[in-house]
Image 1 (tube, one colour):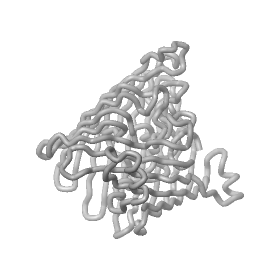
Image 2 (cartoon, helix red, strand yellow):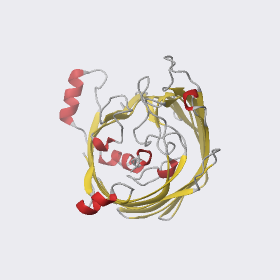
Image 3 (cartoon, one colour):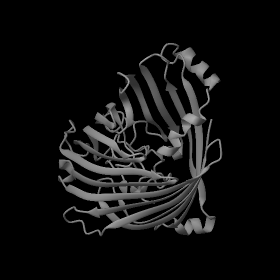
Image 4 (cartoon, helix red, strand yellow):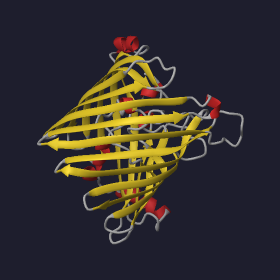
Length: 374
């Protein structure tokens, strides 16, 4: 599987943690003894996931998987630490991952290992309708789709962004909105955000995303039917050239319109995305453009959740000879109580590379994932 096709976890897993979260007394005592003021009453929980994968058509792995009947890998231990004191405006939330299944790349992250801080932010409640988050948080841009291991597919780089900066979230009547400034896409001076986004924002030796402004707004058309739009604009820092100052010689912007709805037990999500990047000088200022679309249909039945995700990408970059490409994920989730059991099949005839460029390439794989939360 190409590095540009790496997978990303679904927001659904994290959103269910609040129902599965238990206080880790032993861990809490250890943490509070080290920092009694900062972590006086945290809620600590964790999880584990592992993944069975069988490559049907990847260009390199299908012969091996045919002999071994696939493999079990992508293991990870995950810890969640939150602190939301009653009657106080401050709060804290974090997610820390360890292991090959942490969805991070040691060559490009801030730790140099299969370890990373997926999110860590401090929150301040300004009033009943407005709050600020400072740290690494979810970029308010469109939405993430449901499939777990195939991740955001051809939304690559825009389906699951966790960047470092400050975000204001608020509402006015039925309108919800977010305004954010992200100083960089990861911790440190050269690391890139390789947790979940599949390496779609350059590398430590090429460029990274910096100084990005994001705006998002959504409102309900009717009960269970919401439309929204997001926009982001920022700089690209050159990490490849000979200039030791690593100048901001590139730029990026993107816009998305989206819809989320539900009728009885049937859900539908759709979004249309337009992206532009002017790569840094060391990459010859190549101007990358493309449009992408996503459609997701789902059905809920008790503890079961079925879904079909489709994503499409059309290259608009001058000189790119790739045709329009598509990727589909068909999956099922089962809530067995302590976690989720996933069965997913991914098929696609294209991908998005580290520069946001559309390329052609066939890929088919089966994923079976089990996670457990405590």
